[in-house]
Length: 360
Image (cartoon, rainbow, N blue to C red; front, side):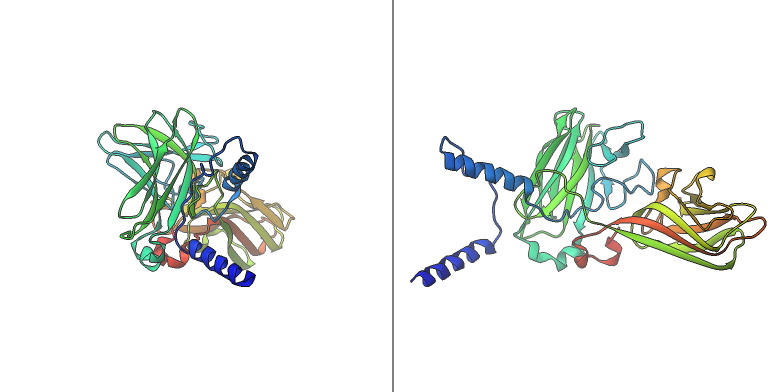
């Protein structure tokens, strides 16, 4: 009898968990009962610790290959007259929350300004239509310049679910959960600023599959890639000594050098460039370029010029990466140069459902 009862309860539990679940953080209601208070305490802890994988690529707005006034990679900006700006560390507008930077969105007079990331475009969603009827829960830090300036939206092609508005003049964490419609055709996350020349900041967007809204920002998964270059033999100066077409967005973190034949008489100096839409432009100032000092074998440097030039992407501005050799040793030229350009990239947890051209 005991075994039969356990089997029955197990089947009931499995059946209850099979479909989409709902989350109500207010239940069970708290009262003077000590047991209920303990349950509520544990429930709050669960809400603050339950985790998943953040589905957003670049939730802290690191990759801006087209400049500080164009939508960062992985995002699109829409709405007549809408504008965007990178804000945060080292910039004129220092507002930020999660990480070094945030995005400031301003709407046009007659239309809302929408910064959107498609987690699953139409073709990708077709492959992932098992998500219909399931839930996605998102949160973000938002700061409005008015009481009803900016809010978070989850859009699935059939409708949009919106969060509350971000607080006026201060950062607030807003959340929203949406059950994906059975008529859904895509899955996208939006930061929306209302029409009327309003503006608002967004930072740390976090989206998880499931019914529990994230209680705070969760970093997105990242990978590091090395664009490696080997130039054999005695070195000579010249442009485009190595050349890559970028296949995945990222941001260059540093460049490392090693030579099998040390330069003498002068330093060995190289340069790293990205395509700015008109020309190959350095991501280093003249004095900051990667170098191996005369008599040495190793060198490294971090990009230190216009921020956009250290950002790379697939297609358009930032799509090419090149290496120049600007100077070689005057007595003995360096030789057998090995270089590594180290790039931070964001993994896409739903990438298995995407087309190759969607990973941008």
